[in-house]
Length: 208
Ligand code: ADP
Ligand code: ZN
Image (spheres, rainbow, N blue to C red):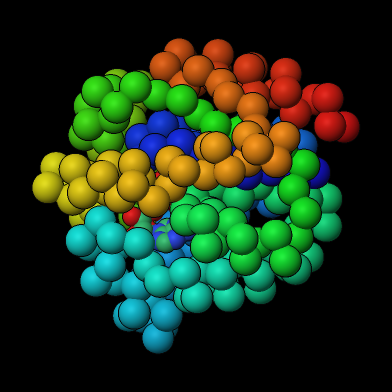
């Protein structure tokens, strides 16, 4: 099963991806998470990506495409994968057409006005990278590994505004792109996380 999640920053892609991948036994590929890992490890790729991410800009297509092409051939992708945060531009989507096929693209739709609030409450574990939200978890440490939670640099209000603009300008056109291809499904992302998961699984069940 090969899936793509589309949706603005703050739509809940990461949270939903964890659930859906756990359910279907497919690999969760988050390009944002991969890039943050490269930065933590201080790799050349990480050094290159850091400035873009901190400004809320996109990392250049060539860098991302190479990274994803390599990743989908890993052992844990044997049963399939879910791409979260990729493709983010038409150029990335075009390139991916030459790399792999795709079964379904799920657009998680959330009104723009809700995004700033959602991202404002976002917290991340410094140990294992898992995400939390202040509306559903009041602690300061991770429930899984006990490490401290922090606010991602690019979740600060100045950067968030730019990320939403970049989304609208460069990523939103992919909705029409995959619609034309007959691959697009849309779920309402402005429900409880459990309701969104149920809506997504109702769609992906048909692929099994
Ligand atoms: P969100 O979905 O909340 O915007 P991500 O964790 O997916 O956050 O991405 C964080 C940042 O990583 C993006 O703002 C961008 O700079 C970079 N990034 C992630 N995926 C891509 C991609 N496919 N193409 C270009 N840049 C990317
Ligand atoms: Zn943790």
